Length: 176
Image (cartoon, rainbow, N blue to C red; front, side, top):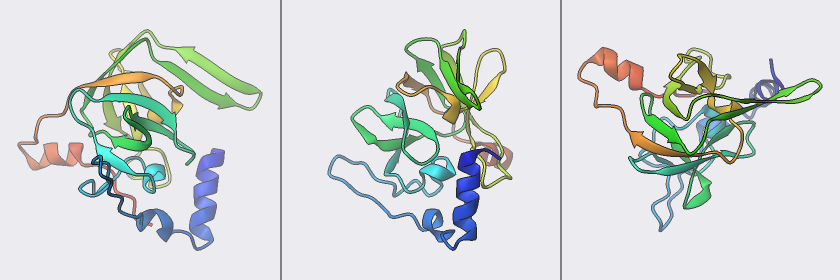
């Protein structure tokens, strides 16, 4: 268990389990809100103002101070942009990963600048779920991406035609 998962586990054991489940609704004049996004971004971003992704959005990877990185809106770094599974993204340069190791940080530059957003670990509520699948089939947690990388939403997933497709696109809901 990494330090962030341990922290979340500690919160759930110490009576704070409803904090993420009862996240506040935010509304701002510029349209930023988390209403209409019933199943938020990764569980650790549930208390952050958010909005759904749109085609053409310019996103930046950002550490929101919640033990994870996610996509921030270009117009407001404090707003998390929630991306649906199947969304296609193009990065402005090859993707860089940063991973904390016992002896320091390990940085890896991938040979890809495009990815498809996925969700993993769906049955494990205290794990990170947001991930990117690269053209070579490698799947990397979004929280491993280095901060400050810019991406553009190229295409949102098609509307599901069957229940099975809807289940694949359904965001992981955190129940505390």
